[in-house]
Image (cartoon, rainbow, N blue to C red; front, side):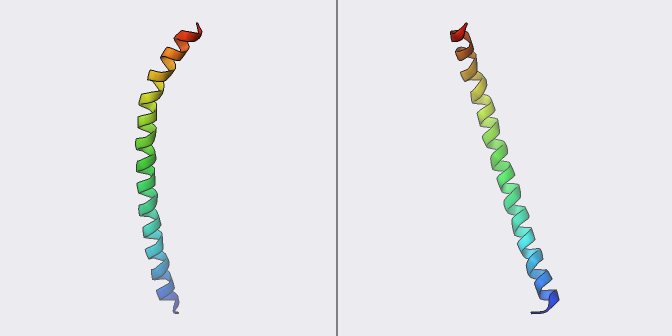
Length: 51
């Protein structure tokens, strides 16, 4: 296989990995947002019970 073809294949794989990475970052961001909304609601009553 020529170097040119190998480079093209690697660039294609890199593009795919970058796309997957962006999707995962978006999912993680959404999950963290959800968690951040839930955590304060749960921690406040727990803090009041211990006092």
